[in-house]
Image (cartoon, rainbow, N blue to C red):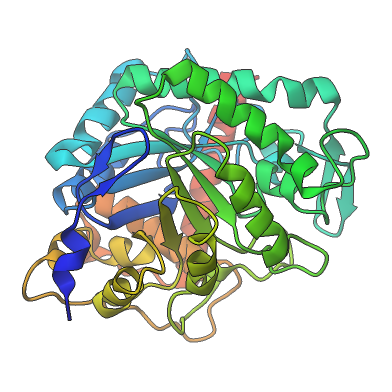
Length: 395
């Protein structure tokens, strides 16, 4: 096994260099304080991944506005944020030559109901989910909002940003014909459904300049009948190739109620989206990272050695071992041991990993012993408290 291939630097179009090919993928760590600010546990969590050798850490679900959050533990990149804490997160999370990028997002129709009025590309009323449709003015306000958030991230010391266009959140909703029923310039063809994302990328680039990396996360498929297909997603890759994006992170699935989400599986049969990534690489010169299902060093080495992807993005693997990059870059190697759960409740596995992140941020993972059911209860109780804080802060 040529494990040394994982240690090769990766130069991005902006000129920034990732020191190796191992990325800590975006996860909703839910470690904000309930008022949009970083906490010490969150800062420590990203510091641990930096110490652990990751080339890039992505902070999942960082909101550009408090109006449409995924959960009340999200950060909110507006001028009212605690800049001292935000700068500490950027500084400690970028130790050891690690890049740290907030993933800029808007939950759209998936905005957390207790603290928002969900609003997506088109009105939606299905079992378990109801949202309003966005006006044209709502859409045209998005580029400036993302640009301001990206500029704030740059000023705080982050080394780049990622635009979230996957997993069923707002830009993923725009790309999906199942959720985007618009008949104006932002609906219909793939080019029209991509239009707002293109406008956001352009305005963010203007705000941060040519040398600041901008990544994007997209779905290869929604895994929903009538949703984004792989053929559509490949057209999106072609469209992204015409922009100033520095890194395309490929994933899939959605968090819409009733949908099968890759992130709540109990086991995997290897990397989920590697065949799509390999095809995407023939359509763009922008580096490709692939997320989902990587559990062993051998899988990561094979994917990069075979030219199927330029970098491997790891979420649960790096939750199980915050030092995983250093481990895989060492001669000895060693793969994480994934827990096996017996009939966990829906959402239980995801909640279990979320609460494990809390334990990591508190340097207390050795005492972490929750079951998936207990993890859901703890996660929901914490969210309930934070909802009250969010409403008090942003109402």
